[in-house]
Image (cartoon, rainbow, N blue to C red; front, side, top):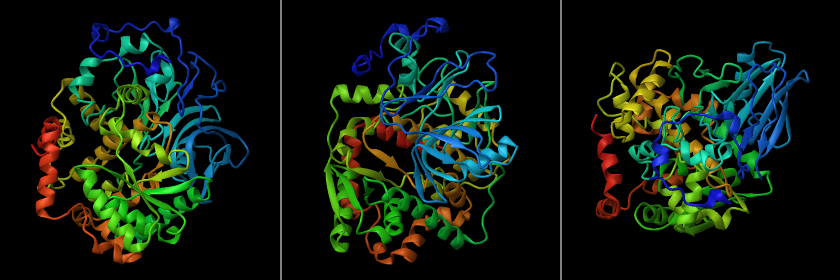
Length: 504
């Protein structure tokens, strides 16, 4: 198939001014785990919305409200947080008697975990909502009225290559830990739906729906901690009932250790895995193997396998050229468990420790587009700064730390983590910390908790205190320094990105 071919990023065609010719559009075969809506006709009646076309392996469930009215389709691997069940073919949404679509939508969104996109079609309202990390991605062309999971699901060659912006791809260093934030994509005229926004399929405009109000600090952080653990355990219970076994990523980091503590009731029924290799992977391997041995965990190390040029090219293409970092280079490493397991990771837990904060940040610190781009490690670029500036305008009134947290949620998780769903349709990956209720609990933690990284430490202390005896992200000063030096020598451009992050 054509999508397996390496795309020539240096073609002059991708630098031309793009002129849309929608009537001549030919759709490609839908890649595995991807979807698209057939063209939504201009002037279509509100009761006319085509069902999504789905690629092999992507579950599509019909949604009804409590009154039995059709409410759309749910694409992906969603979890009902209340019933502790996965959703496969059909689901009854809560509070269907509400006639306000905004209220109804929020009832649905706070009930769901897992990875999904909701194509809402309810009482004449036609919208698309994503989960809190847009981890079943949605991209759209408002002029052509096209929606799908990636450019690979929407554009056949040569349209794909003609619309590809190779200069922007290179400027954002997408093949070296970069990505397209703030609703940007690698293709002219194609936008990404960000977390906290829905796409109106009549106006073809994206509108913010979350946060519904500024999330205030809780006066009872320990209660928030317990609620978060209950949230995570509801998802573990749902996924553990599936035919596939659960494989928890086990590293030297705090989030995976915290999830291990949450999974303690199931520890004899699940497996733990670590990708082995040099640099950071050596650190993970040493610490994880010690924990597994001491507690008798079912543990497996997966050798880091480098993708071939063709495999890496296909990975990048499936994301619509919106992702190309080390995950593209080493994604075959997890293939040995792809058919037997569901992978559980701690992605999103960084929200609870102020990932983008600096020591000198205060509530009144001025946060600009330049600030955000530097903290992500981006080089200055006119279109990037314009996109982030436009994103800042959509936020409600927030202090500096709240803006930075929101940037991490939407411009990192929703723009870097989310697009990877389409890249490797083999192993189902779930991140139990990424759903709207969990996110609000983490965002509500006091500032001093976030600065100290207290959440993981306190979950571990309460639910499995012995795990605190092992070091986090360290093998000792000498070994740590050697690992950092080897990493710097392996690719100086990655180090340059890290230097940019601290030039604030």
